[in-house]
Amino acid sequence: MFSSADIEAKLHEQGRRATPQRRAVLTALEKHASHPRIDEIVAATQHELPGIAVSTVYSTVHELAALGVIVEFVEKDGTHLDLNVAPHAHLRCTSCGTIIDIPLEQQVADALEAGVKKVGGVATQYDVIISGLCSSCTQEHVSDINHSSKKGA
Image 1 (tube, helix red, strand yellow):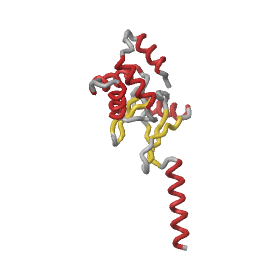
Image 2 (cartoon, rainbow, N blue to C red):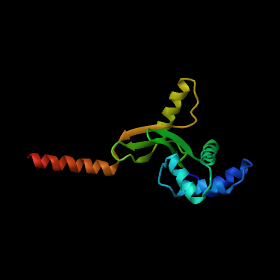
Image 3 (cartoon, helix red, strand yellow):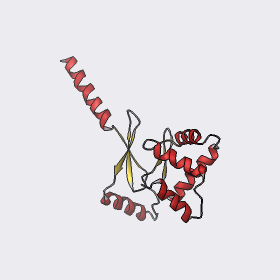
Image 4 (cartoon, one colour):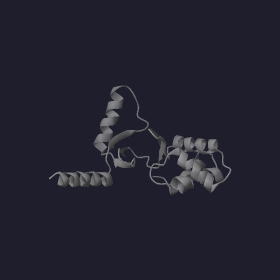
């Protein structure tokens, strides 16, 4: 994961300035919960820097993704952003909608890479999304099952 300072350094390496607009987007990304939707970043950035255009936020997000300092991935509810650029999977809770990073063991990442090479491709990003229940919803689900089975007994 890159810090704002790391990202600003990457911008400078590319001959780009850390403008107030770019800084506002970075601040919104750092303050937001894990895997925010792009529309949430637009709203937070507009709160931080009133008057910033939606198109400026979108172009900044796309620029940061092109620099490799954030990842964009699409879910049913919109485009999400991730500051974790290391190869990993996501667990999308089918109950509450939370998205959780799941580290990929090197063997899994290697197997994915080998699969891509087998078909003549080159992996540039991993978008592995697993549907299931997060730990909180799993506990609630188990509790509900236990409660229901006691009623029927």
